[in-house]
Image (cartoon, rainbow, N blue to C red; front, top):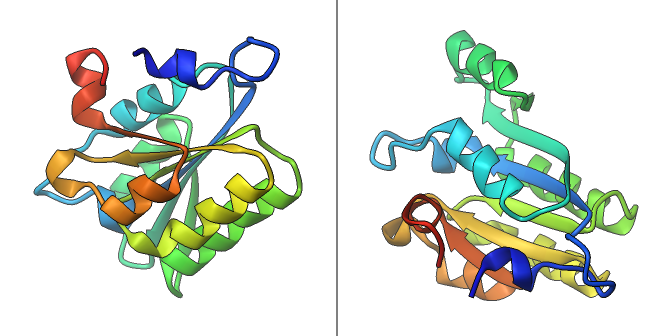
Length: 158
């Protein structure tokens, strides 16, 4: 079944505002060979309008990575603290402040499970985007209302 069909709102229209949160240190790893354009494409495949595209990085991020992400339309959030905490807090704020209809998190980290559960409790549709099937977190996949991998998108669906 097409993922977009599963993410339509109650009125049958595309899902509305999609907020994308990317866990940079966890997804942008050499072993996954992930392209930022693929992550944006995954979020766009959810339908609706991409209302936020945020890439969270730690203080060790290279200027080249930051520049490349900004050139691809990402808002880059660099934190000297724990990237997971900042991302989870921001994701939760989007949910409780009604700033999105769909929350998508690109990660393989189970730390985001409570944030996705909060978004679900506020009636948002949630999507866990994994870099690949071998990089998928079962806990994150099960917490989200929908899950996908970048591999599935490249193959034309799930």
